[in-house]
Length: 328
Length: 299
Image (cartoon, rainbow over the protein chains, first blue to last red):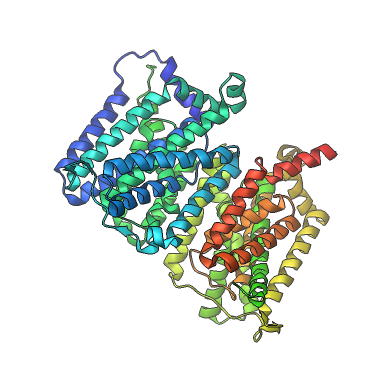
């Protein structure tokens, strides 16, 4: 938690000489991925689409975990709310997908507010276990409340994204919409990070006691940060439902928690670019590790453990060391 | 509406399961007390205990007592490997609590995958330790295995109590939990104690897994519910004493049995998790911290 504070210090103290090479490099990479995805075939589009959706999810989670220094092991609950909410509203009640997206985001935020109010008083292991329980409860309900969710069978026939007469009917059109929403989400997160509220959140991560002494309403800011993360997760869940056209309880299971945490830690927790880097790299891993066949998951988990032990600041931390903000 | 015999039957089943949760809960406490780490992979030891024992029985035709005696040290060794390879490097590097929790969770998934790949995805079971039964008490069937569970559970709680109060090693472990720095100044090898705690709690999980497999089934993915329910048991019991964790487990088992009776089997996990949330929220700092302050004020 201390590290996230020191990590963000250079932003405010740097006296940049020369060009911000790191930002330029990341920007070029991002543009390259976007351009490549529109020239590539169907399968690549799917992989990049998932990466972008996860990037949105992780950007929200990063706000709560990276900046505010808390932990939610149950963020999949809000993705499930978004996914199932959008699926049910659009497939059964013919609500406009765009309207459903906004409605479920609002609903998830409200649920996060109600659930977070008592839960966020917990710390450490208790917070981790309580949020983990939220995710598990949601998962169990999505399996067992078959009238609403169709249980293991999953929910199919979800229309693609769109508003009014405009529908993103091809995968590439969907991808464009996802990219736009992701860009909006990242810009919002970046602006929030350096706002008065964002700085207060990072102070909470450094020391709750000190932040409280400075007059920061710790409990309220933690809650707001949790709600922001939930709204992002909900949006990611909705996008997933529309992008694939099918959802089932497994999509929003514990594996989602571990995958998103891998992305956060691999990319670099507590930075804006970190979740994006993590989402792209982790989404490509299965393709790279295809040769491992059955041992794919094993290799993936070993990689996660190695990162957690040896490189807790992730790829972005590495990049910062190679291309630092300050000269010398 | 459910009739009385059925209700009592459910409660009997719940007591057996609850004791198992209690044993898993003790495993949580042992590691937490030695290192301040909550090992989210606790449930995987239950799975490994059942799966390894079932494999020894089926593939090598060993008698149950021998298979059980072989299984426990194997699983304890897996616990030690986890401590040495994953938890200790993070601990010495000062990783955050959440990163360590995530690492234990990842270790659980890793062990599950390895089990899936080596032993397959088929659920397994083996016969009760004593053939025959169940014992019929006024229409309620009490399986003989329940007596094994009760007996072994009582034996282990008693044994652990003796270990923690009467042996040098047990006292050293408790010293680590109170103040690791002071303990190391007194010449207690704190790191070796942490390893010991992982071995001990893995062994406890394995025993729980062997005891429960005849009445349930085991498969590579049964770890999470046992882990979560064991954690709930430990929290109800106050994260301190073995007896408390067992009491917490029994309470949870009975509550789950009632949930099955009145809400249906599919909602038993939702009920348990709701109990967890309620307990956590009534004691916002955790029951453990509540007891600690109580103990401190008494001093």
